Image (cartoon, rainbow, N blue to C red; front, side):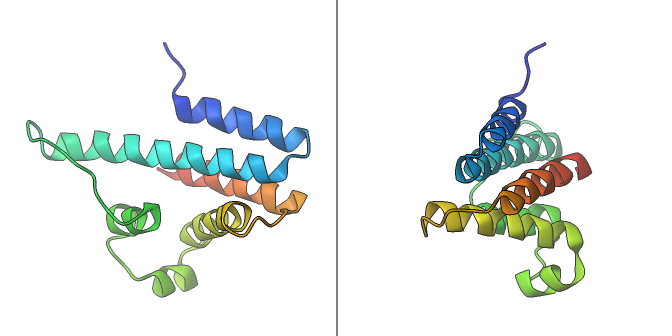
Length: 124
């Protein structure tokens, strides 16, 4: 049995964390999350729409997660009422800081991001 790519990436994120490369740990963990969500959606939706050509489209991961996992509820509502979503948003925000704002993340931000992503995956 082959190990799923997202699991290998999560292991890589731990390796980056262990060597104090916190930004890379966050980026790799978020990449693992993106791959997992795409695989999960394809699996679930292919069962629901058996025999039809599926294209999972959307503006971004945040929109797909709200649509398919949280019944299209608004960001603010979810953020204030759902810990799993709030932690998901935290992980994505850490990624944005590392990638788009070139901010050096702290150890705790990196560790929390990896943990929150694992929690999200395990919840499903």
